[in-house]
Image 1 (cartoon, rainbow, N blue to C red):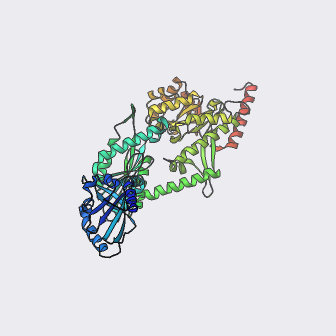
Image 2: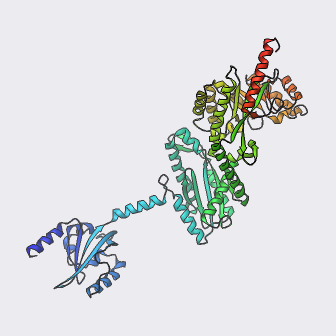
Image 3: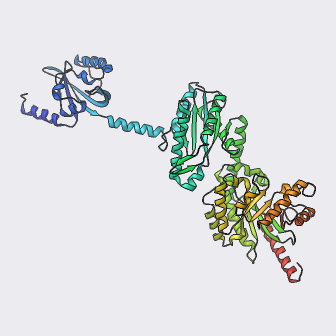
Length: 568
């Protein structure tokens, strides 16, 4: 092609550009296409030039293209002239791909012409798709995230489609994280994100809502029997351990179920109803499901309000430890105190634990209050033994503390900070708490005993532990529940159980403390059985720290005087 120098220079420049360029005449035939264009569309130059431009336009779009080009050729102003537009294009192999095309038109002596600069935007589209997926899916598990899940739920409910929602929270997941690390915890979440969708198939949409909480949506479905069957399937799926890195991890799940529209008129209300039901399932011990009931809303809300008040009380210094003496039954010498939490409520006065501790179930606030009680117990132990002595202070552990991986370290820190002997502190746990995870409980108790801190089984005999199981635990004290002491004089069975517990405790060289002693007759019966220590109203009610300290100093001085004068 013989062109003037200037035109030849422009032609060579266009041919060498990395941007795909094309020129089309008034008949719609391609008159020029540079190498970048040929490479992008998969053609050789002679397969392009002189052929209709519709060869690169998907068939469904050719009619609109032909009409548009005819209008512009007839003098109409191009609506997209000079503006980049994203459309689909056709490669030589018939595959479609996204392009960005910027169109220019002009009229010369030989008629109408159109030119276009074209970019392949496949990578941009893929990147956008990835970003969209990141915005709508959980990056760890690949499941829908909370935002996307709630959007889908809201759309289905707005359309009137019947829906059922299950909230699933994992039982024991925190222990996996604390014991094996967050990498193992993440792997476990990924394994669950495979097992549950595979189990449920296309009948449900599964999402990770955050942490170890998952949402499961059944739509269209509002049949309680169907959802109940699905809930049972989910719980059964957790009976099989998760095998990760050569380890077999046991895990459970708690489920809260709500059905629309009975339990919620919109997505947020349905989610809240499921959350109330989930809370009740966990409060009942976990590894179970609960359907929402209207009464749950007021009960759960009351507990949440109570927790908010407790959190404020904790910050405001309204919580206080009271101390009840534990004595030698023979001499009535005080050998220890049990620390009992009280709440100085600004409106309701002094509240006992039964009024507020149930609100702490499944709450992280329980651990925070628990660490505070250990610190205060250590502070009291130092004051009691400041003048020389060996008086212990016993404090109850919350289940959240007992299952915490850093329990030993927190106890060591408190003992060292207050500069007390470790044996001045005793931690009380219930047999029910320890039996929830027998092997882990054993390791925890051993770690506590190894540092010299005492361990007491509280309210023994009211749970499910066998007498022989006590041999495994490194205990220092066995506390006999007050329920056996109340009728010890009139109930042969209570007396027999108490006698057996005292004998067993003596054989295991444990201190035995009988709780709830209110009369001298009860104390005499216990002493005759060989029980050497007791606690109850007969010896003193729970009292503020200053009163307990004063009582201990008085009785300790009295016993010193008795020994000095030969009375014992």
